[in-house]
Image (cartoon, rainbow, N blue to C red; front, top):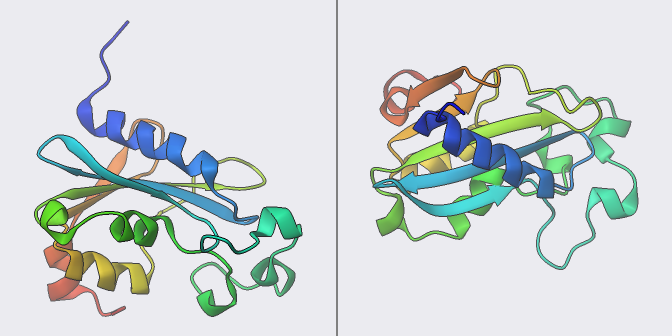
Length: 156
């Protein structure tokens, strides 16, 4: 058996983490890694103690046919990146890498051009995370230096 490269190893873990997600549209999983150690994981899901979309069997954004990337205030979910950052200390995140994988709930296909939303980008910047790696295919990914969001990203 061929040994999996380290980046895809962490992306595979994030892909596994997303299976805990409770969103009826898209589920994301992420892993924050620093110095080759997993600091934290997170998946898309409702705040602790609140009913989630799987339990309620409906999604406000889906029912309203809201396009991807819009009207997040209608969502019951906390994003995977936010959940992972909440569970880690800033000291652990400074200089780390966040590995991100998204899948469509219905088709289980990878989310095309998966990326952090505007709010999560802000939190990633403030957390001290250095790089985000987002899966495009089972073996291909994009590496995004967070500094580029600070310098060039007008979505913020």
